[in-house]
Length: 150
Image 1 (spheres, rainbow, N blue to C red):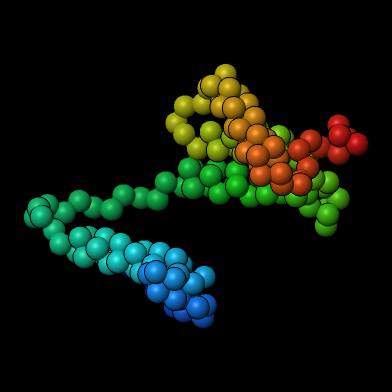
Image 2: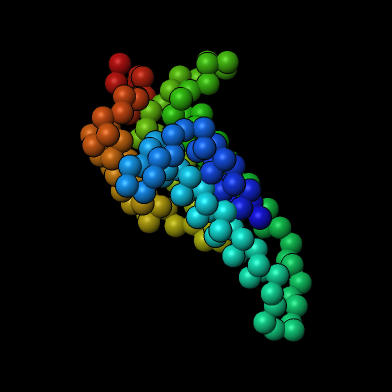
C-alpha cells in the first residue's frame, strides 16, 4: 500500500508540469508514467498479499533488534562522519573514513564477524565510491579527513 501511496503522490506531483503527449513528451510525462507504474506495482503486491494460496498461516516472528540497530546506526554514523557535526566540534571526516565506518558497523549486524573480508569490502566500496562520485560525477565533497588533506 505504501508503493501505491507513493506512486499516486508522485504521479499527482508530475501533473504540475506540462505532460505533453507520447509524440511530444513534456517534462512531466516520465514522472507521471513512473508514478502510475509504481502505484500499479503497489496494487499488485497488495492484492497478491491478501490472496492466500495455502491454508497454512505462520506466526510473525519477533523483531530482529540487533540488525535493525546496527544498520540504522551505521547509516547515521556515515552521515555524521561524512558531513561532520559542528554542534559538538566534529569536523567532516571525509568519504573514505565514512565508508569504512559504515561497513564496519553494518557488518556487526550479522551473526558472524570476520575482519579481513569486511576490510576488503570496505576498501572496494571506498574505491568504488571515490571513482563514481568524485571522478565520474565530479561531486565536490571531502574525501579525506581535514587533518590528513589539510
